[in-house]
Length: 412
Image (tube, rainbow, N blue to C red; front, side, top):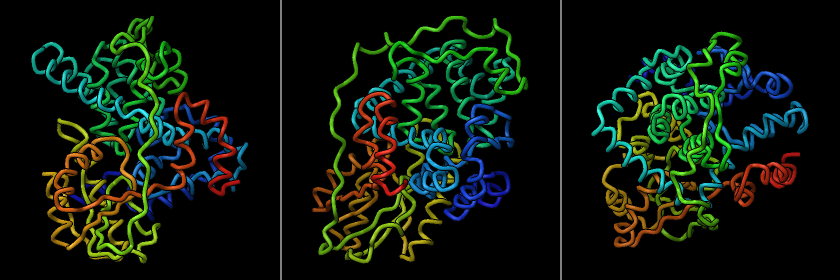
């Protein structure tokens, strides 16, 4: 599987490969990115965007390093658009940390939508046609096939795809979000869920994203020329699906410092594949494990490409840690306590696990951990600490603080 995977994919799941992609794209982070970022040139031809997202998702490459490279190469003003796009991912993560109930609403809604899919044969056929690229809309079908075959889709294509899925094909938005989450190598619970909510007019109320024929033609360089009749002429947001108003903002869970005196095990997940960045020498380490968990993304089968990328990224992280590694899979939650107890640990330390399926699994594991007297301590990176306090409303609130954010993390 590994050799077949590596032979087909342009994304090699290692820190070294990610940093090589960063180095190659650095000269393009300024004017070229600003002028070309919205063009979807087709599978294998995405030359105007960085293609760093699968590495950023797992922190094989750090957002802070990417932004520092952009500033050093083009200046903060010259790379303004690129820097903003890097910060969007952190904004979405922080926003969901302030409102984790939105993730709970998504999960509950997805269960209902999947139940409806089981009952409704007509809906099932329409969803299957959309996911397999058999709708008859050549542009939409091309994007569906690219996503499944490569695990990637240009950001503009993601917006068009989601809009067409919701407003032209009249399909449940959560099923589309789940389709993306199962197949995107860079799939992130915050960016994916909130991105689909944004298209549907739920994130920014009353402002759904409308995919239009002329926009698709222009930004695919006329590779596709949709007929106006194929797309919804008027779109109305999905606000009626949810009660008026958003849940109140609550502070994100706070990180903590591990107790250096307690026997400790290190847990490495795809949320952060750079354990070497943290000072492990001060810990009383009794063991270390990698935890594969991408299969938790959905009740349905997750793409083998996603699962293999995660496995290889964790393998790379383990090799860089110079520690003896146990390989764990997120199955029965109580198994985490059993592993830590066998290692003689009373403390598990791990980089911060944000709101999403792995956080849910860790919460399910908590009763067994508590019973065994094992504490979980999470660290949080300076990048998140700098951005998340501002991620309480729209992106503009973060955007106006970007100079201060860059200064606070040492990027000027």
